[in-house]
Image 1 (cartoon, one colour):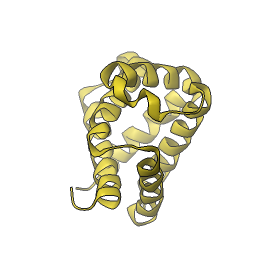
Image 2 (cartoon, one colour):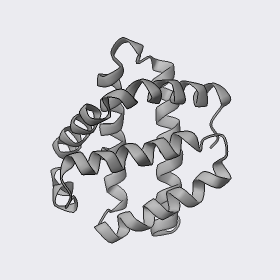
Image 3 (cartoon, rainbow, N blue to C red):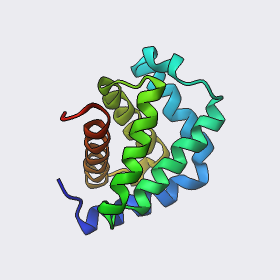
Image 4 (tube, helix red, strand yellow):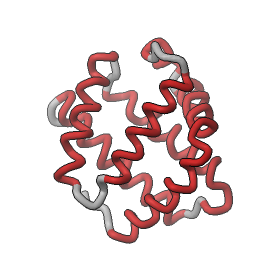
Length: 139
């Protein structure tokens, strides 16, 4: 799977719009994640504001790395290895992706279009596939 230049542009622009509300976005994300997958709540040992900063940092690294996937892959693999240590399972990636999409839709409002949604879906699938493959073998 590859990400088109247009998708990269959409992702970057939308992420820059969400960055100023990063703290609020993190709260929305974790509330929705715990609604979708309450079983993951015990995996989070840090306070949500601190966890949110880590989330936004990881997303920023991913967004900034979209033009050079060869450099992004090791970053994703490192995150995946940490997730395994925290107890993350392959099935947790779906509710995380759904919570991310919900957060972006909520944060962007009318700017959330079907094209933008598909761009984020494609990027998240690429990231999740890369991470799961590294962490759990062929998925």
